[in-house]
Amino acid sequence: MKPTDKLPLVPTILGVLSLASAGCTQKNEKETPNIIIIYADDLGYGDVSCNGATIIKTPNIDRIASGGLRFTNAHCTSATSTPSRYSLLTGEYAWRERGTGVAPGDASAIIEPGRTTIASVLKNAGYTTGVVGKWHLGLGPLGGPDWNGEIVNGPMDIGFDYNFIIPATGDRVPCVFVENRRVAGLDPADPITLSYKEKVGDWPTGRENPELLKMHPSHGHDMTIVNGVSRIGWMTGGKSALWTDENIADVITGKAVKFIENNKEKPFFLYFSTHDIHVPRVPNQRFVGKSGMGPRGDAILEFDWSVGEIINTIEKLNLAENTLIIVSSDNGPVVDDGYIDKAVELLGNHKPAGPLRGGKYSLFDGGTRVLFISCWKGIINPGTSDALFSQIDLMASFAALTGQKLENGAGPDSYNNLDALLGKSEKGREWLVEHAGRLSIIKGDWKYIEPGQGEKLFAHVNIESGNDTLPQLYNIKSDIGETTNLAKDNPLIVNELTQLLLKIKNSETP
Ligand code: NG6
Ligand code: CA
Image 1 (cartoon, protein in one colour):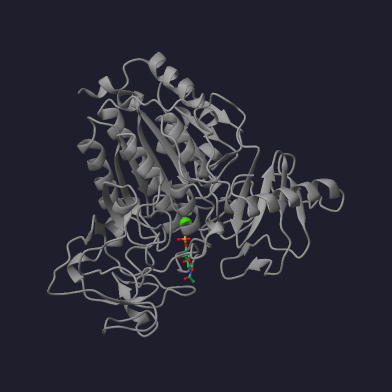
Image 2 (image 1 turned 90 degrees about the vertical axis):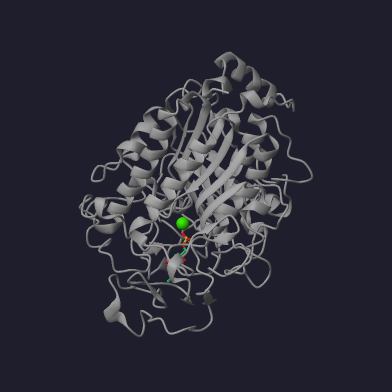
């Protein structure tokens, strides 16, 4: 089948869309577009030029934004990685489940095998499904995976046909890729040993041998040294499988491109989850010094390059009219996240969160309002959308798009917002919940943050947490920077949002 066979006529697709939104579950595999989610790590709302950055230029992201729909009010579900990714894939708010906080590198699978996910829904709809890049949702049974054998309870057990993943994060051991069920390039004669409790083996650590480091930690990250960078956790063995940080973007972008090429004849779903721009920021030589902002800025350029490679591949294969591409981030920005990499010193006037307050780890919108672009040539009219949108709705929206039904409680918090995603409606969600330790809720122009104990400033990362012992209420339309707490003057709104949040907490389908 030629690529163009997949999308014969725009009216046909629109017909399918209206059937889907009318609740019809008929499917027609010939009319299922390819779907690609490009998911950055720790990229701030203001880190890209299409969202107003001027010091840094992101031409490829700008290109996809100008050909697609750029959302100004779209959100991940949590201000850190593991819970946001959990919600994205399962359609359930992570804060409903224990064990969904930032996962160590030896965590067992957080999403149980057989669970309905965005990938299994699309697989049912006839897609070939793949994940490339950062996973950070645990692997293996209780006690963690067998790094030297078959890795069970991974992406392939929740709907992905193919995976090439960084098991946790770039700053956590093991510093190896997993391809399908094996550590890629592992020599069985040199097995991996791993611990998050104590030193294993005799490899140097950042704490004991700082003179061996090419990048020093600012907090944490002083355990085993791999490729001149000390990490979280201790490991030894698996030398032939170790990644080189400078090549991570090239390797995973290459795998993502290959996945697209291999599957160009049939519908595919690719979840391409980059390491950029998470710490340690060690971009390829091609980007070093190019942003003028040090490794953090250079990593943004590297991420932009990865986005460019994906869109160039789609265009080259003549798939643009048959591919829905989404670009977003797992949480908001952080400048110093544990390595001394000049990010603070070279920031200048750049505002990683744009006009938003707070950042990664924060209850303020800087933590969870993120870059979000949807692009589908010929279907999505280019422009901007102010619709309130949550990544958690991708699951139900894709189900609607492809004529699938979410059954048996699957995706309990995921709602079909396909019309908003495709720009057919300016009306998105009525409300959404954000999470960073505790919860906040946005409804219309209002955002309410639950009161509670806790630091107001996470000093080690220099980010305002959003914690307060008093209830907070902001009008995010007139005060996007959440500067003026209006809770005292608006007790009725505070009460309404408190009750609504309580209802959502207590019930999965308010
Ligand atoms: C923190 C790490 C930080 C980062 C974060 C997870 C320390 C001191 N800090 O605990 O560097 O790895 O976890 O980031 O270890 S996330 O984007 O994957 O959620
Ligand atoms: Ca992250």
